Picture 1 (cartoon, rainbow, N blue to C red):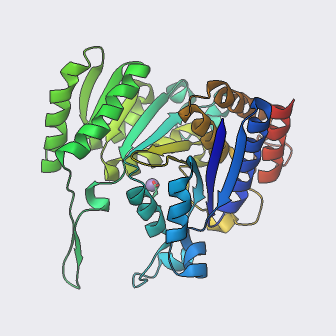
Picture 2 (picture 1 turned 90 degrees about the horizontal axis):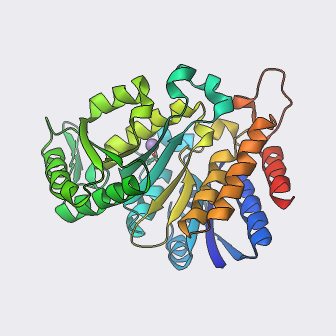
Length: 352
Ligand code: IPM
Ligand code: MN
């Protein structure tokens, strides 16, 4: 296979984890005889500083023409506490999602046996938890009409039938490939938009007779996720609920640095860690590269390259078992490994 990859390292720890993702990708391509070409592009605060736009037209063009985007992270504290800032790094991410039509964000929540003790939840509760959160990514409050003056502000949570149908279809299809259990998460007791989601889900469910479909209010789902995370197989929800629930989900595994994601839709798919740019750690070689490396596994799997994805997952498991871990998940007294060293160990494992 020939792969053209747009690489968007972004801000904070982004460039450091990006480099490890690229190294792993190259090693896998070499091993399996794929040809890979990388095109680097600016985004986030880095792009604002350099060209005044968090998702420049040039970056859009590079993404559009690529087979996949390997994205890292955006965000810089200098924009966070300035409500008057006209342009923010996060707008780059939102622009990328919208312009590439990435309406389906797939965020797997998984645990690693040897890291169960790192979870703030009891190990016996999280052991074996393994579910997918499918988050709608280009609609809802994020993109609905907004207004703000000194005395009043609002965001509009609008969804149209086609937007709801296409994301629910993704949910049903993933459920069919997994344990055939779909949970539609909404707030239909209060929100009109949620009632339409639920109505459409009920219309579609008979077309997937093998899937057990249940409906859960988002407040209840937030509770159930920590009380009984094994309950879930596939959950599907709107943009804002999905944003909140997936941060909660990342805690189940014990470190935000472990979870990858895929965003797919109308154009080039994007693969990225679910964590942010962790600006305080920038340049310190302490960020966990595994979420980025597992994003590369998801990228291969997206193109049907199962063996490639499986090898990356095996290498990641082996690194954890060998205690080759970044500080936040290292065992007490364990050796110190940085971002680069973990990446290099995994590359070496792949090359063997
Ligand atoms: C995420 C992030 C983004 C979001 C931010 C950075 C705009 O939190 O990908 O979950 O809210 O979608
Ligand atoms: Mn988020």
